[in-house]
Image 1 (cartoon, rainbow, N blue to C red):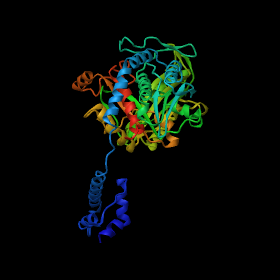
Image 2: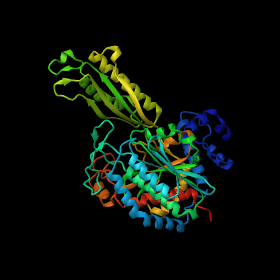
Image 3: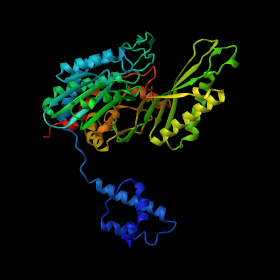
Image 4: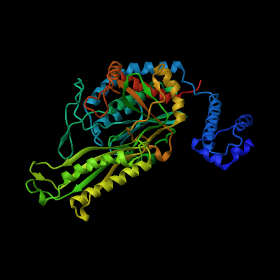
Length: 494
């Protein structure tokens, strides 16, 4: 009787949403099925859920008997601390220099040269100019796995307001002669520094590990095109050792000394797109002779806000932001076009397609209402894109014991919530299906973080803001986290 309940296709269909299969021994099955006899009535659904929960609890209890991954030896962690501590003054100087000289996407020539020079001096085999400014360094150290570590190099178009002695103060001149304010407002200068700290520590500790370490500096993460550019520039056809695992780190306004290393989907997918409205320009005194793109752009921006509130399921996370409106110049001239620069965040392809469809419909509706001719309808230009970032569960479980040994009790967050921020790190490895882990490293002074929390604020500052900064105390920590992650895979077994 009990076996027929679990063999019944209707039962299997009800249990399928659990998302996994379970091994259930015969005694356990008998105990469960005693309680479900003659239960094929309106009680089936809640009963099935109860059975599912019981099975999950039993299966999880079985799983907990499996040995957990062990931390690397304490002596090895001590070596990591010693190596990075001895290198901290150099790393801090590198960080300050990088922070003072930010470079936006695909212009990171100075930063790339610093990375290449440092890696060459350490004995890495270095290849430059991949995806325009990307740098790859390879260190072979005997048989074993191949591990790739990434740091992104580009900065933001933000005017710094931190007042730090090493603040960025000079604008960047672009190829067309214009100048823009630039700042490392997302911590990529720290990422590069942490990568170079890892590269040095692993050379210092070559006797303690075996395998291949690949460190690489990627351009243009902020625009979502850098990883794609490196892949399209034959990253995987150049003969580099293929990765068995991949890692990345990112700054976060968490307290210094705290690291988030959590499994599963960590970050949202993203799209960058430009919408161009084409009207008819003219004199500000005769608007009746024009089709005003400023008005069309304003109407579109307001209408876009209803996409999230009225078209996307409220239980599906999504964000649509307009980061820039480029239109006109003079007070008394109605221009002939306007460009809106949009950014989307999503976790499922269905939500992404819904947003894009509604954006197109809003654009067309606004243009038709304004009297735009059919051959001058708004256009959509898709630019950078990346899917959600999904940390490999087994890899996170493997590195976390060593991270906890490094950081201390309660300092490694293994259940940190997913965020709507996005990354293109994973896009480099998507075609290879490489297991990867992407961690967040706290860079805010603990006292500043505590003060912000006491004031009811989630964080003391945010990325991409003029007041974003990296506490210097976080510089050695990121290098140590990178190194411990590498040794969790590559350390020689005793």
